[in-house]
Length: 492
Image (cartoon, rainbow, N blue to C red; front, top):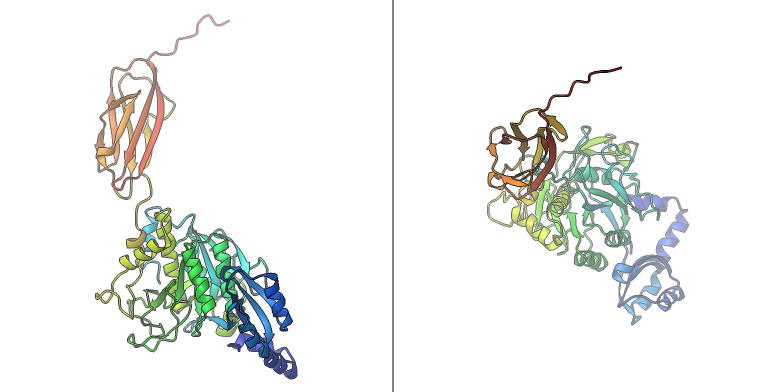
């Protein structure tokens, strides 16, 4: 009843041959989904059938159990049970042995002040090296469903690489991710070999819903359909989350054929294929009717754990930073852009985020949606390149608190903005009265000449907007004092 890969086989190898054979023959790991919220008597029934509850999946009214294979049919006949399905092994999409931010213009979005700050992004994978100098400041927490603890430290490397593509910090060292200001969370559901139980994926999605995530990135999958996994993805989507998944690496180079992978193939999930630096679809990338977007996925440089992990040992991948290829690397590019869209549009729904991603994608083939690129190559600038930075006001003259020994004063400030200044928006109040200043668009200096001022304290207020509506203001005071100091005489 179990679908396993190497990681599972290694675990079984630790048992004696007889014990391993008996465990495989007698017990099966399944997901039992009930018609409504399970009750104590439901789990009592499971125990009566010889089963043991391994985990509760509240998001889909289910439990993960180990039960004698011969008792499964009895379990299915229980009128309280909606369905029973095998808890299969799901794996990280293997790198096709071992550029992207610039190609999708994420760096252009940063110039508008948008780096994804405040958006919660969850990487469901092998964990994250949260001690990495390019990830440590953005990392905010997570959970390890492999070991059932609060320490989702990566022992494979796959999750750390994906996390770096999304959220590596813009800190002058190493690499920088698509959205270097997000809140980064790790949910470890895959072990050191990149293998994990499907039920742990469901639990990870449930954790993301319960912990107010905005975006889920899943560079993992299976070719086996699961109702439980689809229900979990649908529930998360209905809860408002953006779900992004790698399309898979079983492509045959023919976009007219469909290679299925789940969760990417579910309607509630954005399926992402991989392209190279020439915008060609990667030979390994899955294609087909469920593909939604494409993103860079060949020779992508990103973070790796700063300690030895499985990818270093088994494949010779470098520590700290490495280039890897796969739809696993394409998926986090889209997850990062989704975060930038959310940051640029507070309160936006996940449905609207998805529409923006589709409508702004670079239609490489020029024919609208197709099975090779989906709606096209994700474009961060088009999707989220909206200026959210207010203009900068600097070089206040006279300086705040200054004393001026002249009755004629030039009041000025320098203003700048990446989108340009809307000259008609400039407002200046001098001592509470509206005045019309001059503006030099070349130098960015706004100025007003005040004359015949009496000795007194004066206030200045300046307000300015850029061409997209962002506004800034500044207030300062200065004192006119034209009387020379009085000489002190008769000092004794």
